[in-house]
Length: 383
Image 1 (cartoon, rainbow, N blue to C red):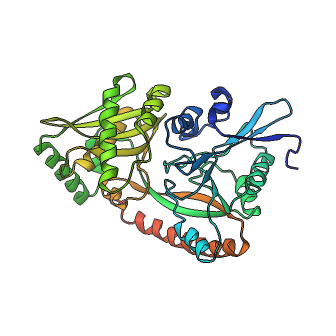
Image 2: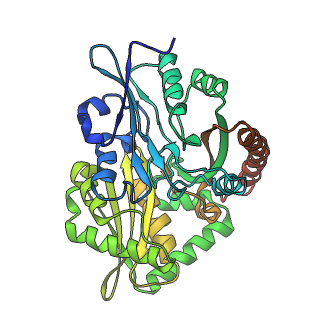
Image 3: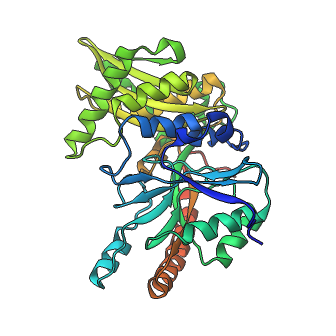
């Protein structure tokens, strides 16, 4: 039974439903705030998404016979694979070589943000809600459907997705975890001697260059702070030959709707502010990070993106910092490997079969990689 007396409705804009209705479905999860009504609205209302950007809003919602929204899921029709951080360019190229169109495809994800969290939001764990969502999404016109950086799926969810021919893909990120540290020196003391020495040397170089830092959050963040941060963020993208995914308006809108979430780390030299990094906070977890500089100095990137946030996290009781996509170099700064997962469904049987074989091999490689990375943690060996 697929709840046939219930009605599916697709939203072209998140503001087609009240924030209280959407947010009432958010689960108790550290990253739930990142799929809140306010977060999704900031993406949509700031020019980051839309047909021109290749991200067409098509949020899935399910309503009962009393017109009460029972479930929802962020959903986008995509015309490319930019801003996802689960890389399927090779799949798209294979489709093209055989004369098939890979785009458009459907994805449920937080745009431009590789953070694991809930995707299907629901009033209860009735497995028929998951079944209905899977049936609806795979009935849409497109080559494939993808749920990226999922977390919080229960055993029933996994069984239903596998029964519906969805395939799991494994990945790895690098996260910092609190381990009863009271001060930054406690954190350093847990590291191996070589890593501890390296971090101290890097921080000393930053001080010798006359760079100092401060953090700001909530009402202490003013519009000129955001303007400076965005100048740094924009310049970093441009130096790599790319336009930034996010607009200044996005950050301003998000801060206006959720001021308690943003934490900005500002670096200063003799001329004034020179660099900035940004984290988003939700309860005892922090996510990031966006970064940039208008004047470049050696080692300042590590200070702004790792050491300042870790010091802040220890002061504020943060239990984990998720450092974003990729970056094995983070391990030398006290970050540990963390497994991620995404789910994929391909309409074409032959391509689905080929991708399934590829993911089996990739998954085995990822398992070995995680084991190997655990052996190269920055921390002292425990005998």
